[in-house]
Length: 355
Image 1 (tube, one colour):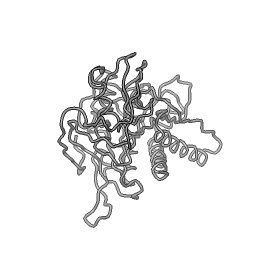
Image 2 (image 1 turned 180 degrees about the vertical axis):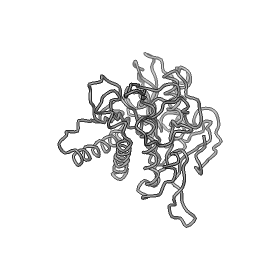
Image 3 (image 1 turned 90 degrees about the horizontal axis):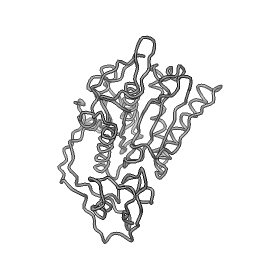
Image 4 (image 1 turned 45 degrees about the vertical axis):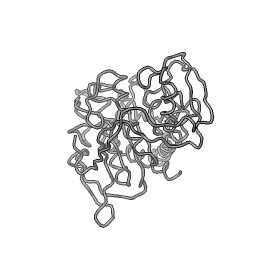
């Protein structure tokens, strides 16, 4: 799917594992894989950085792996403790990158540029600042393709989670670009840009980065987006990289919820990012709804597949209950969806500038 004048970088890779030297380690930890453990969660659980230790781990445990990265419950694995935390160099086969860059004019000043992914009314993005210069954000909207996610009726129409999560994600992407960030929209729709309607028509034509059909199987679908993010993460080593995942919850119709933020318990950066966005929301609610207590929280949800298996620091956001009448006002109103994107962006800027 085209992205207008977006930057294309074609990277040639070599199939296989990353190169790693065994003599670089101080010691080896012997650990047993427990139910629910994946490679990334196992490394994090025992204090190892997946971005730096993954290649060594795969080499040491090749005979005990299920496929390339699967673990056997109850099996013993060796975790390397590396000297000086050297950065890994990715040599995996890669696909063409299709990033959304912050455009620069011939004079070296940021210039407005059109991005068709945002739709005709929002395609032109005018720079607002360079506060997010040298940052990379990966954005995943929940579900998509054959899976609409949570669904309900609103009047005579059917509405689904994936359409509203995608709209908020596009609005967030546009805000991030306007502030100088490089953005990868991992789940994308070829013809649904930012929409200002209350009822967003459902379809199934979303694809996964760079242009892959989204499978119906849930594990395969989640693995597809995790693999896309992790591949890009390795190629952008050394930059400030973050992942934001956006979902709409589905609970009992009478349950009104605020916006919730989740992170991995072993990720200090993920927790700080979730806390920054949460604090932004708390202040905005105090400003615009002073008589209403904001009850949204940020908390550990390390069991979520994407949170557990992706390399960048991650925040997983639930923006409301699609079945609740009060939450529907937040989700269906396009101005409210824009406010959600604005506040998330402000929280991300706060997170970046606090480092």
